[in-house]
Length: 104
Image (cartoon, rainbow, N blue to C red):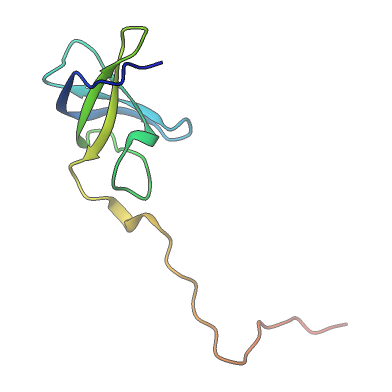
């Protein structure tokens, strides 16, 4: 359980990010004594909810029941790289069907 009231809004950089487990840590100059835990679900404004190490962010900080800082409403301050999606497949011509190998 987490205290729902943010205690402050800070700027910082992504210290590390675990792509597979979808969480990481933010280091802030305003809150240097601890690494701020960040869940991918708290990242706002991106198709791919992840951060790159060293990427600058702004976030609210709440304190968990265990007394640890956690990020909320994380806003990346750099644009998303790669657009976040694969290019569309090539269009098929009208009336054509995919090529089938000859029957034997």
